[in-house]
Image 1 (cartoon, rainbow, N blue to C red):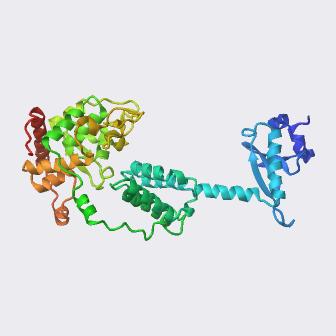
Image 2: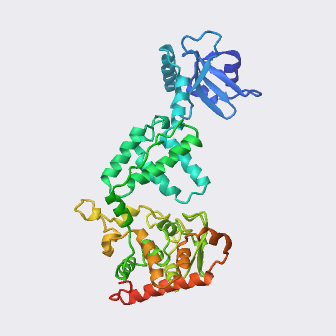
Image 3: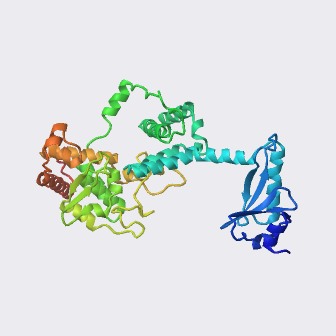
Length: 431
């Protein structure tokens, strides 16, 4: 066998073998060289400083000699088992050319479609929300990826309003809650981003889609949705939320603070200042995009003291026991419809709603906290600030008093009330 240098300098076409491909080197002073195969015309091995690739050179059918030849990469010695298989790939590509095809253009079109697929655009949207430090980014992407799973390989420009309308209609038909409207809202934001920021579609397929007007019955149901729990119910939930589990500790945190579920699930130790007896939630963390301080009463200090650090996610206060990362999958954890207790062959342990015996949502704990503060005589403004709500416009503009003492007293009063209720279950103060 002749040496690799003689292959390139003296013979323009050499029968490629696995041995001479392995030995081939780029000549000194060259940035690129090609060893053309003697067996299959226009098939060769391209050498660059740090790579070797099999290529095919061709002109599309009908193109004149004045048209530049195209080069199509068909693999490398690292990805193609041997030169025999590379020749077969080359013959297949040249066969498509002979039949009137253009393999390079076809590959480029396929790659462009892949970069504009629904799945690829969701990945870009995820990165966009991460750059903006969007608080509920994980929940938004989880919902969109789950609902659009069957469309993830479709070009985003091929997504039709009729496709979306059918999905929303199915969600509305299967659920009396807000699944359809929540999906529509989050999908609309994503498609607006695809239209005006990413510029991959000319118009949002949801443009002009309006949520239907609620009937009187639906308006009544919406106004009565959610409730403040009685003391007996709160005690039952507190007792079921045992402090030997991360979920139990987080539930007690939500009961004591009125925080939202994601604020509890994503709470980090760096936000907890046990010396100053406060939890400082940054503006980038809360739904209202304002910093919010929660003051630690003795009962909440007891919750923090019982927390164990998970090595898989030591920064989280209430990590998931399954992953060590923030908790999610609330519908399965709560299991309000008792799906796991209806004779399924895959029954697991009861959802939390069934185990505590109280039909409630996690947001009801926030309503209970706010209602409880009012019933304990806490001033309206202090109660609203304890929830993290904003002051009214003029008040917010001119009043810089943080009301720390009053807020500490409010959290302490609520914690003390809960401790009394837990110690005297038969007495319902709110009753």
